[in-house]
Length: 469
Image (cartoon, rainbow, N blue to C red; front, side):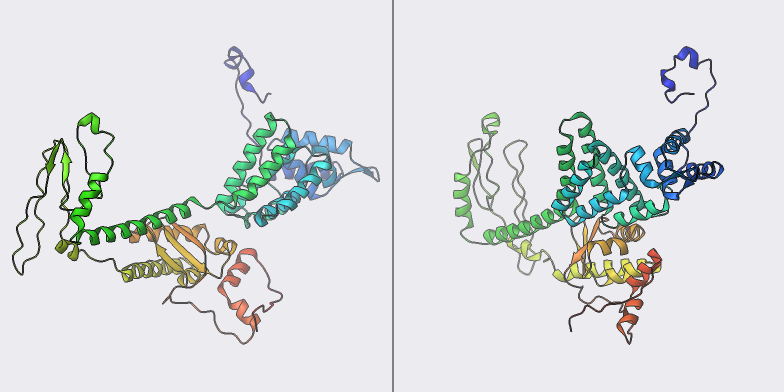
């Protein structure tokens, strides 16, 4: 029996029959430990046995070995050993996961000083930075799995109390935040194994968790850049159009062409290209020759203006686009602001209807009063009066999948962002909360409260009216 079969010579392995034993589930190890404790008349609470099962890390042999050590060092009551959670933690050198829950609460609140003080307490108590980083990795992994699959997912191999703790931490962050935090702590853990001054590296890694929350999402940054580029492009086009219709444009363009710097490829090809700011009617220099625009025939009366073909360039491999005439510019459709509003309203109505049909009443009501802003590569959805945490709770992964499918069906950008906003959509069909005689009835009738009670199996005991009188 070995955990490293690759170290056995091939000449021996080829003459043996192999039996591969896989990791044992957490629940199976815990059940076996409870059975042994009952047979040996041991007094052990569920938290102590859960710590032993978790310390086994999928190995029944390791869990039993740690249990033997715990029995040997346990206090005796009436002649029988008593196992406690505190004793198991001291034996395996771990700290309660409540410590890491408080750490991540400080990270979510951006409290740098509080986080450093809590870390200092753990280090002064004798815990090594490597052990703390390893345990925090496990806790962050459990929080991410709870975020992805819920509190009762099979991905969590911990006790019921630890499942609830991981679910509480998962509510503080998004999937992207938890993934980024896990990557930062994992890199910090790698640094601790090969660097000196381990405490400094652990402190730096925890500070990075707070600073990373101040970064803008890439989608939001790209959408802002593209929106700004669109505004600059439209402004430049309007200025170009006005210059082309100005009588003094040719002379100004000619002087701009003469003062424009030469192309860096002038000496290689012998061709001097004109400035891109050159307007219609300006002279173009190529290979020492001047190519001017040929006269165009005047359009017939009451006939649609037709752009005349631009003469071919004498320079081989170089072509020039035909500048649009004033009549052609007049025929271009002007972008209407109402068209964007209609598109946004139709997208919102389709998504809200699809969410309501799929049973996501809370998300449907929330997005029906949101401001929808379709952009080049993404759809920005701003919801007024809602925090980021409540948005993530209401618009969950299933609702996001429905929204993405509807955007693809409508031909809109499939990428979207639901962010807190300041105002509600104009003309949006608000699904009002039923009127009630008292504040308690109004709060209990609100869809978000009903959804929260359904998710957390919660009971509302008191309602406080915080509105300004």
